[in-house]
Length: 366
Image (cartoon, rainbow, N blue to C red; front, side, top):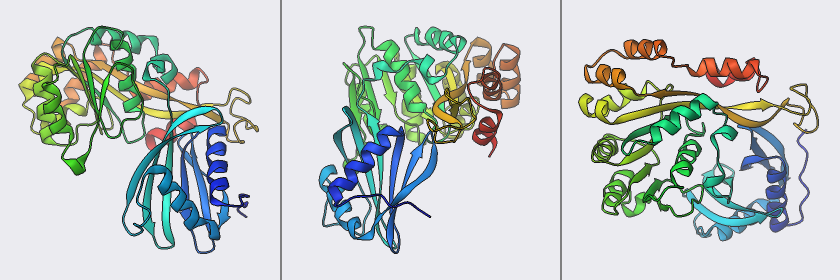
């Protein structure tokens, strides 16, 4: 039986959902209309959990209220829309993003909550990177040019990791530009560009324009196509440090993915500097240590961190990429030089009590 969420009107309902989401550390609120009520679910620590139901009579009023808050069109009901606004919830400021989608029973809404904190507050240690990972990353970021890639599926924390990289470089007197879709964290003294496909501002066109802005470092939110890949490689080749992301299962798989996108092997060998792959895992609850308590809602988990693999592209690896060596040979060579895969990092964090074996299995193999 789904518990009913008490609310007299749409304003009260929205305020209640935002406050409960912040209290439970939810990243997303799903508002889904059904035949006789509206189901509300939260994504907490990466997992969807049902929260309760709202009366059906409030649904259209809530959607209208959310559209007004987010600057979306209230007269459009049969097309997807996106919007955003700033909100203060329980004394903390948040950037709120929302997506509307027409469904069989009416428009649903998915709200994402992002704390309005500066990216300078993001540290590798808090994200779950080991001191050895941080040493390799810091060493690579001392180089004035090249390509740094963070890989993994959607929602694995890639963009947050790149912001942590930027926070290291933002302390230096450098010109930094980011191209993001959308801008998630505000970074002081960094020019952040919101990609707008409806106005022709794509990652590729934005990257070309950014090159005329005299940058030292450019962050490209994602390499999605051949054009963006080639422009990013050219940018790294001409003396700029470029950060970006790719959707691959492992760090090493970024190499054949870029080659498949039409990047010449010798250019990739010349520009690639660092490969990072990651997944987000739930941490064991510090109160009950995975036993289940009120603090973790009896799940045994509270908060998230990353399991990662970090590979510095050394001279030998560059030679192998330039010689079109098979990926299996490149991976074997990296392991012989001390590279540790994401499974090894996960096993180590199980031994440390950070998470559980079941959680590693869920994230990596299920």
